[in-house]
Length: 116
Image (cartoon, rainbow, N blue to C red):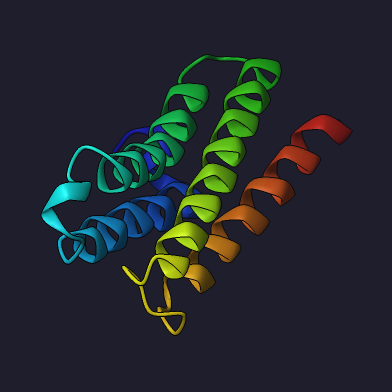
């Protein structure tokens, strides 16, 4: 098992990406290359940047990729808010809880690595 695969934040980011793929299956066909694609790419970017940063070999590089992952999480949150406003997602969708949890874990890990 790779180092990044042991990270709880990576595991949760993978679950988040899975959730996003499931949710966006229900979006209108005309959004296939719009919001559907954007949300899927942003969600995959979170887990991907955690993995890439973990493999870089230094805390400084890892933190840089964690901040990119955090930016993708913010992007995904913005896109989800728009999807709700457009009526593609219900405001009761539970994925926001997982997204908030992933963001909190990213912040915690970034803080831990920058305090050293």
